[in-house]
Image (cartoon, rainbow, N blue to C red):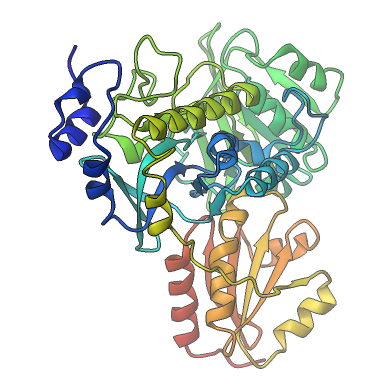
Length: 484
């Protein structure tokens, strides 16, 4: 049996030939101690991804007192945070995706897990302990790593898709549902997520049409029942979107190809939501771990565990499973990955003699300030804010929007860093939608820097602390427009 890369890595450092022999043989604790004692900061379990899989993975090591660290990544809460309703999680009554994630996050914290709003930019698997480089420029060494990066909305790859992304073409019904207000919307896809999008748009869209490429929907029957009889939701079968067409104002129509008649015809719409399937988030692991033909991280063959081919690295959830993409299965896989991490720690002696090493060089998350950011709730308040002598940074957000949650950390940091030269306010786009139209905002979250009542710079969509800081800095350096 060919030894895995992980065993070769550790063996090269320890010079310990028994690593090659199954079952795993005991390792000289003094050699491991020498290997990890100078690595700082050191964590027992590093979890990449703060969705349901990652948080579920944190529970076993947290309950065992290891204080796992969950790096939330670019989308805290994962795809589940966008769900209007979750009802397929055993033991939990019907609740929103955001509420479900709040409960799971609270549970993980209560057991001692550290949940950090940072992104892992690089994972070095050439030596052990594994080195994780974070997006704030710092790094951490991990004895075990659990990959729970999930999946993101797949794109169609058709003409017009990039042109109108954020200008009528979206993927998040919670974040951008208000753009469908009073319009005839199109939802591309026939799975559970597509129906979730249709239900999210019920309060906004005049009518929603689901475009299904085949003769039937792939959504679970219980999900299909939710839209039966709803006059404002209809379904077109055997149709493929070949092109998105529009002008400088936005989308005007799509070109639909009928897979039965082979005819192509226009379909009028100005608002489209993609729900065409998920693509595993594996960019960080390409060239480092084996990838399956489905684009997932490969797990060990003939194994019921979540172990990858590298010792001490596990993968769980939709990043490793292309089939069972349900909340019950991905959290179950996460829990298994957490237990697998415990097994590795035990085999390496960190459940007994070597455990003190974990407390000698612990990881301390960065302190993220949480100043009180005021909310603007009326147009009268907005008018007063524009009259303030200091520049004003406005964030337009949507409750439950994962991208907006991601920007909470950068926004609070900006608020603290510029507290003497800038006032920061948040605006719920649904409560003051007239401002969305007034300032022609195309993507949420959106950050507008105002001077003397006039816009001097903006940043729309997901970004990071560097992007937001650059926007603010450049905007403050610009000459303020004169009041009219």
